[in-house]
Image (cartoon, rainbow, N blue to C red; front, side, top):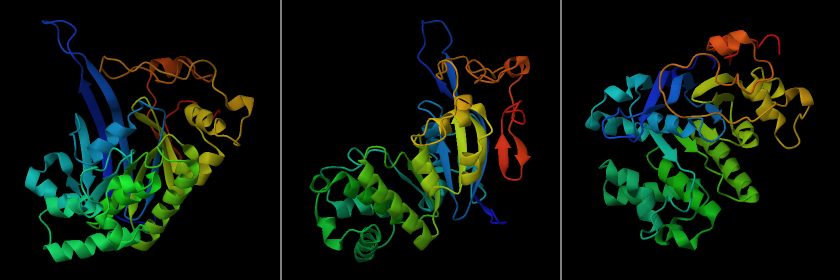
Length: 327
């Protein structure tokens, strides 16, 4: 990261969901959704977070946005621990990090004009007088390729790709340093996906934005990210620079993901035998052994006894696998 200061620092984050009680007198079961996640994101950097549905990506996004507090660990934005901030202090910090959601249809209020939707963060933060807000809304719409006059329309008057541009404008209007994008193109047609991804790249170049880009689509993440972190069952199992990780993934799960990309490397040696799904129920006690051992073709007795911790195989490359050097 070339010595750049950390914009976001996620330190050994654990998060537990309390599930409904099965009986009146029993204790509530708990599901551990995140199991000690750590990473850093520099100012202006783009990091992709990939993994199958249910691995904890969206839970992590909610924690980074300050919408929930970790059970353990810390999330620091510009050095400030989000979980320790009161409502007023968090509100003052919030313009620095904004979110773009997956569904461009459900994330916009159909009863409000676009100009009001884009201005929402400014109004919520009590910023600026009306004319200043109108100017910032017009600038944000222009930045995403829309006209100032589009602000007088309603969401139903736009296509899916245009609606996602509106959602991006809403995030941009407070001029954040970080945008958390949770599956921002998965609900769009492939041709429209390309337009939105090109827009995100341009906005990053123009405004120096940092992205935490969450997706299950490796091709999308590869296009927009400097680094990639691969999640499985609540843990980051591999992280590193994008191209080296895609060229030679070192964790068996990462290799299976890369092998499954259409047009990618589909060598039989990379295929994972058996069902790649994994049970995700309680208890929340620390796991013994590797969560992937049950389906991993390289698993040994050590893998089933002891949970592997992320370790550096080379500068900037972390892998949580006991046998990474042998694979």
